[in-house]
Image (cartoon, rainbow, N blue to C red; front, side, top):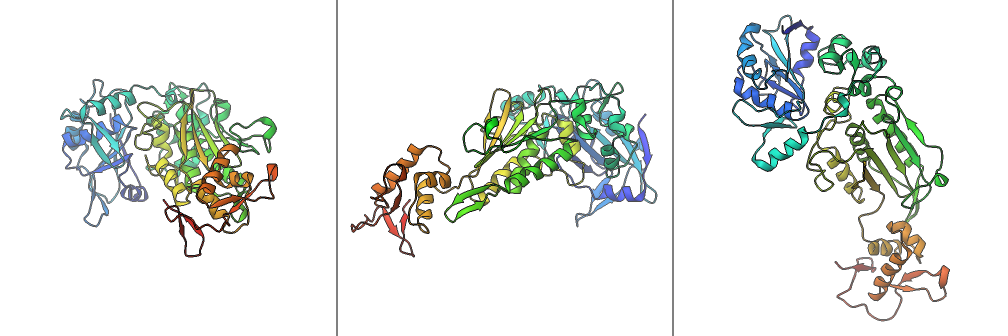
Length: 479
């Protein structure tokens, strides 16, 4: 029997304020069953979602409530969507009514299914932001099969008391904000977070106050600060003991970003004006850490690691890139390894994953705006690492000449500091290339370990094909 609930006017108002998104679709009661099946197919084939049938939109984009006159009037919809899979278990339904508002609004909760769900017209759909996208061609279908072929560890049960998620402070606070409100155990059960009186991994990570005691070694963040620019950090180079960030996923993301920013603010870098504070875009840190936590493989006994070096940050997430996602297409392709976690954390106030599928793109664009090089993503045997380097977009040659606009000389060590080049010999080649173009020369009285370079002071006129005078009379590299 389908549940029917009467909700107060305040909750009905909150329903009317919902916006269509990657997880939510709003339809009028006039929706044709075949058309509705496309949304069901899209949600089931992606990360799941919610359909509210009986909420329309006015020309001015405001919403209105006009539900079914009786619950039986929706039988045609149930007959169609119930036949979309063999067992008809790809959805759950609730009718909402509210005093002074007309009719019953049908709420369909569509979880991600393990099998591909086809719409009644024979087409297959996936959800992208607020759109249902038809899967076209064998390549797209193959990609979807790869996505659907992975069983997520987030569905595994955890042998801890159910009260850890039904009566936690996190859950109680969350239930004050969820739409519509409900009893914790009923709501968690409807979201498929409970199996046989035990919580699953997704439920523990989202709603347990201390999931680390239930899932040790695979549910926290570790932060390291290394006093070096070397490729590998060692225990001897640690500025302090590693910091552990615990708590539910939502709080972990907040605390992890804040602690990382706090440590970074103490870093200094040498640029053309001397020692300055290193700065990384907040959006970059937030999006990359959010992505690492939400999409990590919780079956692997390893935490998320944040390593802060003198000139870069590394964020390591357990698990290889899932499905069809590769290092080359990671900015354009989507895969939710943990669809329940991804969907439900989006219900928290100010969710960390607001723009589904756009997180890493936002992180990359933020680095460009600060004229820093884009993050680099590498894949190891059992993890994915995002390298966020504090390296300017300018070429090493431009960085050296810019430094000499306000300084009389430059050494190999200083040049490596401001260009991010790690090799002394590579830096020498940069100096030689500038000297060949009569932009630099070695200072005669400084040799060996004390050697330094300065702007070219010879009396020869620089070739017009290689040098152009700037407005300030300084040499400018030609492209």
